[in-house]
Length: 154
Image 1 (cartoon, one colour):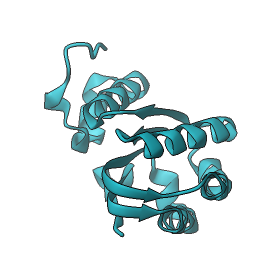
Image 2: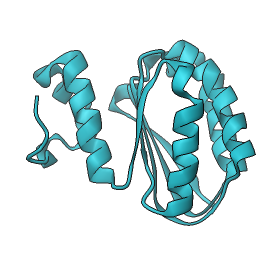
Image 3: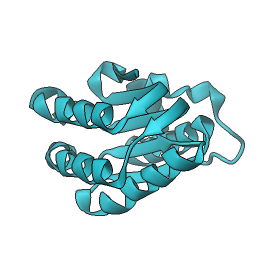
């Protein structure tokens, strides 16, 4: 049941990866942990949540509502963060879209993608817009800048 969190880019990014079986309780627990360290949370500028390797997704709409409520505390500390969710399978995609809808008032710019490459391209584009090309590459090296797709424009 791993739902792993990794902080990247000197604490400016957080990447969460689901593998195998992922439950609503795991995602909720991760959200609570995220909101508990205010100093670390204030540094965050983006999040990448990836359900590509999830084989079983035991998450309900009620779980999503609880997660969004915890995200409110995090969003108060990171009001302009970019959040990309990767969900190729039907149920994770549906629950990610529900999260996207319910979290619309958090102040985050977010989107749900079917592929990790599309999510990375979108994050790069958003962060380039906010920081400029050179600074974004320097600040966020984990976003695989050399793997830009042709449709990615500045």
